[in-house]
Amino acid sequence: MFPSRTVENYLKAILQAEIALPPEQLLPMGQLAAALGVAPGTATTMMKALAEAGLVRYEPYAGVRLTAPGEKLAALVLRRHRLIEQFLVQVMGMSWAEVHDEAEQLEHAVSERLIERIDDMLGRPQVDPHGDPIPGPEGMVAQREYANLLSCPLKTPVVVVRVTDQGPDFLRFIEDNELKPGRSIEVEHRDAAADAVIVRRDAHRVTIGMRAASKLLVEVV
Amino acid sequence: MFPSRTVENYLKAILQAEIALPPEQLLPMGQLAAALGVAPGTATTMMKALAEAGLVRYEPYAGVRLTAPGEKLAALVLRRHRLIEQFLVQVMGMSWAEVHDEAEQLEHAVSERLIERIDDMLGRPQVDPHGDPIPGPEGMVAQREYANLLSCPLKTPVVVVRVTDQGPDFLRFIEDNELKPGRSIEVEHRDAAADAVIVRRDAHRVTIGMRAASKLLVEVV
DNA sequence: TCATGAATTTTGATGATTCAAAATAAATGA
DNA sequence: TCATTTATTTTGAATCATCAAAATTCATGA
Ligand SMILES: [Mn+2]
Ligand SMILES: [Mn+2]
Ligand SMILES: [Mn+2]
Ligand SMILES: [Mn+2]
Image 1 (cartoon, helix red, strand yellow):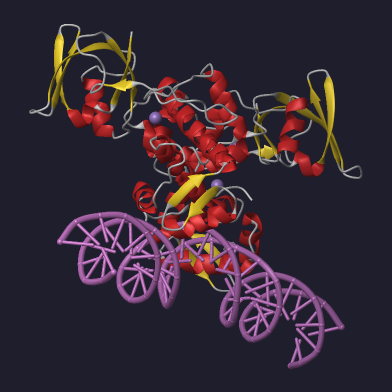
Image 2: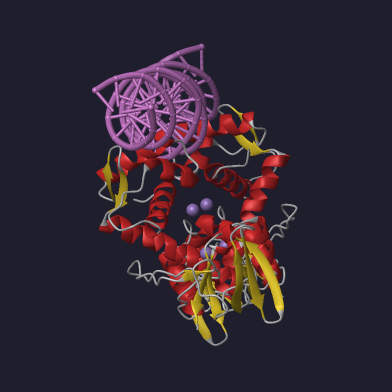
């Protein structure tokens, strides 16, 4: 049997949470449940079923971790999600702020065949509109580590490479201030007291909060 | 929160069955169940629920019929299905034989917004790749009645306008014999004993069975 | 060590969708 | 008319995904 829509969502959520976790560390049920917007008991029940199916390793009161087959499946869902996002922006001309919700549904409905066509048509892109890496047809690819606007060097040219927040409002803010991936900027100053980061984009200055600054990943050029 | 995927499929199936039915005549449960590949009792249960929701008129032991709201919803599903088919052929370059199954899934996953973009991009098409009419955003449009290869005049130029069978094998046969919608042909002869219809396409002759011939709708030019 | 509080699991329940098989109604045809 | 066949409905049960609330386990800090 093929993973249901629900199972696909669980696997993808686990994968995305694991990426932000040290290797081997288990993902607690509370976090998983919160990520999916379900009651904790619901997540527990599902994890027992997925463990039964060999897709996760589940340790009661400790948490879960994807097995190799589970990770492969999860990566394929993530691959579909991100290819669809890129397609909606590049081909359908949709805003990068609205493609996430659309992809959230379509990722479960497209066939392998259609995904391959999309991949073809886009020239096998490596990243989606938000700079998130697109897993290959064989599964996850190694993640490159990037600095964010809190950790990158001051007064040094950096290029925005990724925005790790899918919220439409946040994305629109980034777009309005021309801070999308590809854009070259500099961190002028960080003000811990004001909880703010002052960024220079050409001649313009933009001030963003530290919480938001941590969501903007950059590469030193 | 209404129509679930399942309900959408039921409504669409009823609408498509109704089209081939005299007005006012009820659709029997057996036919509906067969069309959806479910047990008869399952269809009965669902019809009671849909009647409760005001989407169908259900008469025990007689059959069902869509109400106005039910028909509107069903037409919107059909609209999505057919726009998606046209999109997959025109934009994604997929074969007209394989788009039906793909659309069967996508019709439940695309947003109103995306469907409007697709409609735009295609220039508001009136028919899908099989010649099936695409309902407008407000619901069903009046159906034009066409002759088929069994009822059209002999030795008279006609244009194929529609193929009323979504089976991949049949569609591939039509494609291989260049009988897709838009093609101009003539019925040379009908042979009841042989259960065959001989069609002339330019200088070529194609023989098809009567069952298949009834699936090819044509317009006298 | 142990009482507390937080996190997690268990329990009991619900809604949606489905089936197989039994019961019933309708249609048919002598 | 009435027995037989066919279609439909009813019944009882299963699966999946979910919740709220109760029970349990774990971690903590006095
Ligand atoms: Mn999803
Ligand atoms: Mn993305
Ligand atoms: Mn469908
Ligand atoms: Mn079609």
